Length: 496
Ligand SMILES: *Cc1c(COP(=O)(O)O)cnc(C)c1O
Image (cartoon, rainbow, N blue to C red):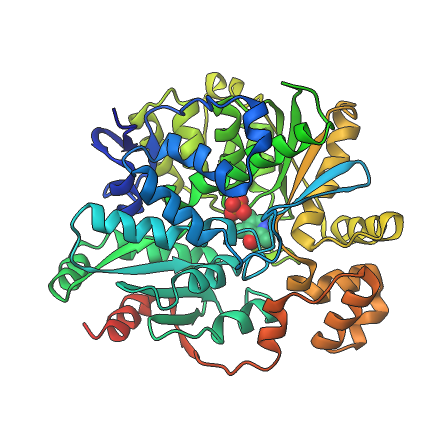
């Protein structure tokens, strides 16, 4: 029997995994969730012998049950290949008492490659399985990293087009350069005069616009999403937590069934939700440590039970976490509401009308798996500098937020013994200026590419291919629009 999926706002209609992947977002605006979280019914001894691809299959086959073994293995093989610059795909680095899970060895040197290298293949396979004739148009709002990773994943994939919206003044220069130099006739990159939340809201509105949907359908197109709300993004991320755990076990760092902590630098709540799913599959995880930057809406939520986005939006040195509406949190809210669609819907409506909602004490009691905290910009920089000085290991600004929050967690809870994995979500080369400034403010005088070479020298790591590629790349996209012009821009690109 297939594991079925339903919306967090309506559990009457059931979808197969391939249907849910194809739709991205449910028609009622809710997110697809599996009816149950399947058990990871593979012994740890077996997992310890598996490579990344085999682990990914063990995890994803439990969720995507309507894919044949052949289909799913083909998707996995096309995704986790030599696009990644390390055989392990997601290596663990032991530094200063924690294990950094490096999720940035893919084509765009950030963790979103882990899911976005497989999503196009899952999507095309899903379309074929469901006899879809239309071309798939991927619509994405990005705070920086998703955009490039989605563009790289979908570029020149037959039967697809991809349109990416990013906040014109809200991403790093390297992030912007990576996106606007994207090749591929099916790619389109647009800067909006607004912030990430406005870009995301604009995209959501287009998904819910049935007139637009009909116009597109008549022209042979349909929308789908590559944002982290797609379960085709979320589920592949569960795999690396299982993989990381099995490596620690294999290397004798932990005993069988020993619990570990996981620290995740969080924005849209996708990565940490994947860790929560891994825990619910049976992976021995003690605490899920949710790390925020100065946009600490999640920290406040975990401490008070009120989610309140009515606050100043702060631009930080970890821009991929500059988010006030963490979309994937809805999946957790739904779950702690006892899978109650009405309760969830009411809160999500309050978020739209009042910008906030409050969970019940009963729901709050179910959040004991989580610990939330945040860091200031100064603490983030200090963490990069201290880790470099103590161990020689250089981490990026997002990972530094997680690392700093882990220190606070240890101080707060006195839990210093539990082995801990820190999700390292970007290469330091992606945020070179912030990273180098943190190490020594004197570096600020250098140009971006001088800094890249200096980082390579002092950190003793090769410059990643993704950075070499943009040194001389040509700018191919220069469209900028107002927030309310987004639908017109889409139609113009598609010739509708
Ligand atoms: C997207 C991103 C995050 C946040 O991940 P979520 O799944 O949105 O919580 C953290 N760090 C980096 C580098 C990212 O690109």
